[in-house]
Image (cartoon, rainbow, N blue to C red; front, side, top):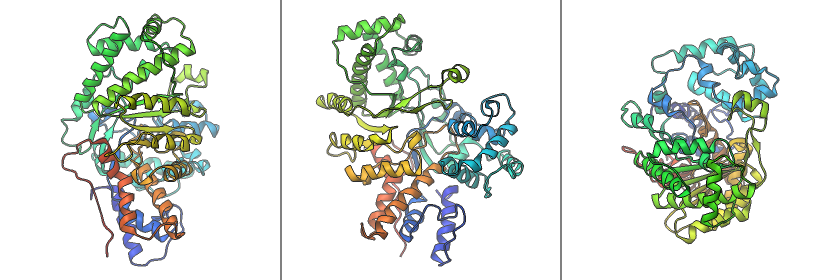
Length: 503
């Protein structure tokens, strides 16, 4: 923990506070986003030094296994980051400087010229938190100092110590759960498990979305790949389910304890088993599938998977609401996950409750995290979670953290306020990165500052007592302890972390 770059920076600022030095008002100082003395105390004394449990991300297991070294700042900072790509497009940057054939320095310069105009977007804060934390670069990035920043950051990247393992270790990340297709061999995870230089436990997450999207041209190829991975022929729907189960048990043996589904909408339309068998055959023959047939197939397959997760004692994650790949011309050019997705309509409350109830009736409802991409769903999801809580498990059904387009200061506050109003904020399993970048762990700092400021304001307004032992404990639980307990993943050599306020 003492090696944490985030923690070291926080300790320095807290010592200044204790000496009684005046608060600074400069851009992104040590009390950034902390607008009361209570917030300052909660963050620096309780939140800042907590470990990170990153239970959902899109980091590359290959890059972790290879302990990748990066050639320059563009590769680690801009590659695959569709958040930045969208901002650059909105600023009028040509695509060649975003995903095209421009060289890495040209792409960095284009991003640096865009940064000053991202004010109001979390990218502005994330950018400068990452520059300060990982590169000790404290100036606001812009076109004028881009050359200096390029040289400064690349000099640091060339150091022998700038590796993926050290980035994870120094950010105090104790567990990472990647996102993996059921057909993945998990060979890189097996390599990672044997690496002594990495203090972070890295585990796979089972994401079978391609096996649910029966209307897409990717379905039949997925079934063929599943055959190979499971080592069994798939002639019908029964074989398909058996192959999914085989792969789930394989993932479990490799340490997986979470599943994940990214669904534009959650259907609930029951059908007979014979009808589902017929729909499955149409899918593998690549015949036309109606909307009702798709809904029926997804419903029954999701119920099977939910029961499977319940038997395995996994946590199921449901990411609900995106409309993906809306720009067909750019999709043909760049493929998925390139920054052309948007927020969909509200999730059906009836369908979601019926789905969870179907699993609960058989006592096979797993721990479940509900993420809504449409912030209008926050209260509905929080109230739905309250319908299926269970004795002995704090927050068995969770309202997940502000996700994707809600991964903002306002989005986090809306999500936490909805949870506090309708459920229990104190049981929240906290922040995740949902990122492909190894520099994104400053997002946990961002979240923790917002959390402490919110609770600090309650103290200042007399809405809660100034009981810092109680409030600090809740903050630490949300930052790390709740996730550690909730997922039940053993982390050798680490215990639940607590820190009490100094006298």
